[in-house]
Length: 220
Image 1 (tube, rainbow, N blue to C red):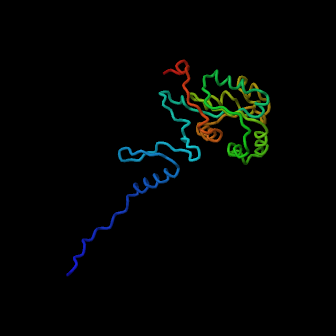
Image 2: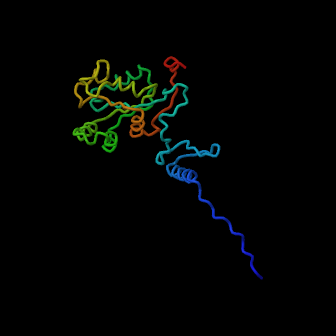
Image 3: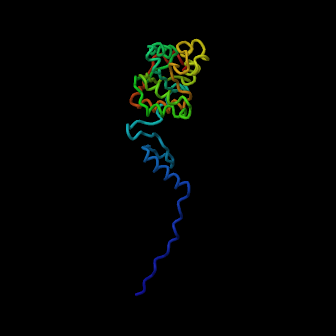
């Protein structure tokens, strides 16, 4: 009995490039711990978690406030000379009086690995080794402050890196004499602040809490 050959099927067309890229992105996202949701046929990334701590990465600048920038955060660190001179309380007072909200605070003896990452951009400077030795010489008080335009405002409050150029009324203008001992660090950009906060703090060490005086500080 003759066998009737099955009708041949046209070769399957390869996936369109857009679909292949979407599949690759989804696969990489799962490796990084991202959660996804299907929205109108499109996969959108919602969150990305640290596989070691299960913390949501990039959460430091998410906001539900109707006021743009209210949830902006920055890293402020009182350096070993500021701690030794017992200036921590006065520095905290300045940020509180300005209206910013403290959401993270700890005293640490910063390990050299953390400091090398924090000052990565200065690694080719001649003062880099002495800077690491100085920052490792004693405790550092690291803080995360939250508020409207807190990164830019904090830089103005801290003053010029060189105390000789820092204006009176700024932290360095009032408390520092030499550039090698300038009391305090403040993040220089929103992106830099996010990187530094993730270096110095685990997200479980940052507290989200409602500040009762927001209505007196911001126009809602």
